[in-house]
Length: 377
Image 1 (cartoon, rainbow, N blue to C red):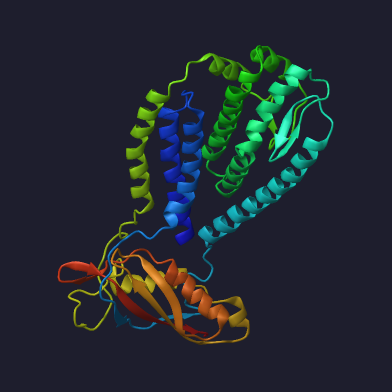
Image 2: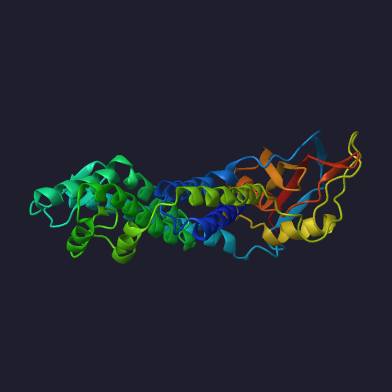
């Protein structure tokens, strides 16, 4: 559940920040700012959801819940399909394949730069200029490819390729990668044009070269018409700075999104618990004690290995209901064996948000102990 929340938050933050870029900076000739915003969007989307949300938690009390039991014959959830787990495994499998393909493409790109070609290209610090280029063309082509190498454009591409593999189900990452590659070319064009009096003509001549590996920085890449148009545009750093400032409120909104916590699900009566000093109201599972028992029964699966070994026992799971209602820090206080303990932990960790404990009118954290009995019949 935590991984799913991270995945959703990271993609939501990235979409908001990418939307700000498309709205404010996409047509600006301040290429350094455009590149900075795209890279910052990716890094913030990946890291912000990992930061603590900043919720205040005060006194932590331990509350012992009544025992919940599951038997081999009576469990209504024994044959339930865990679609979330299946989706997670499928997503990780596709991500792994994409990352392996990315590594293979890196190897191909290194080899492609070294191979003979009629097209200027670069990858990290490797630069290839075609031998057929005239002396004047060679200077301009070298300036263009050196701009890619010196500014670390290949690192940018690899970062976005890896992120696009991790978040492959969100097309916004691929859109941003295409935009970043265009910004790289525009930035290199703006530097190289100063070394050639007819740079636009050179750009046209080189545009019909041999196709290259997608990770390479290629002089004659796509978006030729737009690149030539942007070469003629007047720089607008002052207007771009103003637009960049307009993006900071959206950045603050993205930070707020990353720290958002899900509200408690559905309804909320409470489990049995003693009154503890400092706590006026105990934490409540959505639907109360009866709903908690039904939830455990519907979601807990008796491990097949434990059934075949005829293993029974009681697992005591300790967890914290935080001041925002989220279940956290689940661990086995006393267990039976690994497969049974892990199943009990899985179900507790996947619980929906509780209604938190109250002390003095404020939500506080409370530690819970839940015994789960595994019994064969």
